[in-house]
Amino acid sequence: MSKIKAYLPFAKGGFLTAIAYRTHILGFLVGELLFSFIMYYLWKTVFANTGGTFLGFTFADMVVFIFISNATRFLIHSEATYTVAEEIMEGSISMRLIKPVRLDLSLMFTDLGGTILTFLLIFVPMLIGVEIYKYFEFGVWMVSPIRILLFLFSAAFSFLVNFYFDLCFGFMAFFLKNLWGFSILKQSMVNFLSGSMIPLDFLPKIFADPIKLMPFASISYTPVMIYMGKYSSSAMLNAMLLQAFWVFVLFMASTLIFAIAKRFLSVQGG
Image (cartoon, rainbow, N blue to C red; front, top):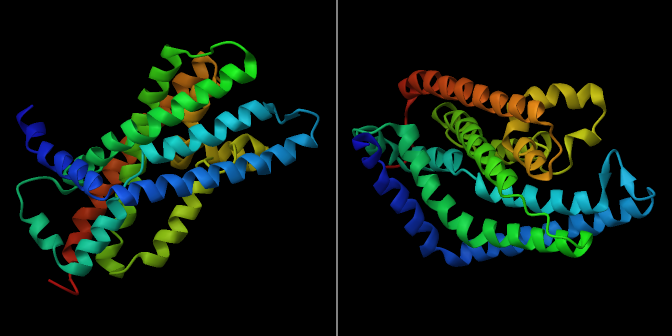
């Protein structure tokens, strides 16, 4: 507990920073909601020509998928890549490295501070909205507290997978100095391979099966499918164990990469 307390100020700082830039959050929310509604009308057109179902998904399933997938992306968002790259360019990374705290945990708790605000202001309202939609669609309340808890448990793994993947990528800044272009490429790749744009089941099986074993599926696809009830009990357990496996692998990878990368530290500012 004493070690955890050392990182609580980072979480507080992340929370206060998120509050300080409320217009940023509002703009981000409005933009993502617009994207969600664009996807809604796109898939509405697709399902209008499929006879009501498409590869095991109904249109109601797709509506839930669109909004829960976006809500999950809000919830597990990480600024690790941006923070590391920015601090290397500014030179402030040197001050972070001399502090008696772990770099990864300080960045993680900073992200967690922002995640708390995201959970309260964005995720909870979107979850309530989805449940209300399901009620009007099916005529009965379908809220499952157990399923929501399992979703949140899986989302915690998703946050860790996404954070350590983001951190591994961010450490490339020690070598490349500027990651702006690569960050856009990385985010596009993650959005597609994680199943946050379209369900991985819509891909040809020869591609979908290997992708489901990669860390990207553990970022978004797994918790969303748990929320939607698309997994059997055994499949859900296996999916969560795979998430835990990727957390461990990416944690070890980030530790190894950092041990090598910090030897090549040179800053352009400071």
